[in-house]
Length: 244
Ligand SMILES: NC(=O)c1ccc[n+]([C@@H]2O[C@H](COP(=O)([O-])OP(=O)(O)OC[C@H]3O[C@@H](n4cnc5c(N)ncnc54)[C@H](OP(=O)(O)O)[C@@H]3O)[C@@H](O)[C@H]2O)c1
Image (tube, rainbow, N blue to C red; front, side):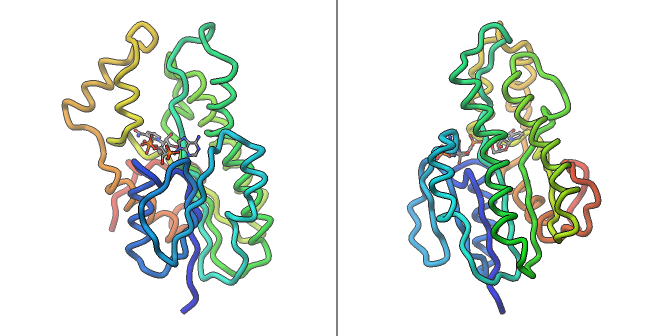
């Protein structure tokens, strides 16, 4: 049986690590994983590319390392790496941080999606692009201007890409993972309440154990990207369906 291919960003921790482990457990995926830091795993089926995805010149220079040529049963791109950005009201943001947040949450996934399409458009593989979005893509949250804007842009990009690419056999999704117990949530809970009025609500999510585990969410993302024809809409939320 032909191997399948997973290209995953942000595999070193949190949700991305759980997604990585879910695919690794299948045993038949060649995995290309991109984060700034790596995992201490040496396996023939894993290639780790150390990259800061806010550095778009470095990303462009490394694209050939990220997209191997060959024939694959499935080719799946999951743009998962993300950052909450500065948690501050508009008027107190910093240009460099605005740029970093938009590069990581929006521009790098656009560049990676475009390169994925260029590499695999002629292939007979099942081709799936999954951009990890957020409820914040459609719900404004005070203090999260950078994050909400990046994720809203990513959701719109996913919709346009789905239209552009359906004739070439690509399935495209923007998937909101719910509120997941990761370092990103821990970082959110360190926000200044003056800058982030919803802080107490986010602290309560943790103390009331309302956060989803990365493993639960990874299982649902795995289900979506390996059963893409069951999901008609581009925008998906893992909380909207149960696993069979
Ligand atoms: N947690 C939630 O409640 C939640 C809710 C909605 C959406 N999401 C989305 O889910 C995705 C995963 O979030 P998470 O909660 O798992 O976050 P996390 O625990 O902070 O992990 C983020 C991942 O992205 C990588 N990353 C961060 N900055 C990077 C950079 N500049 N270049 C390359 N890689 C970078 C990190 O690796 P390195 O540090 O090694 O680079 C890490 O592997 C994100 O897109 C996030 O927006 C999360």
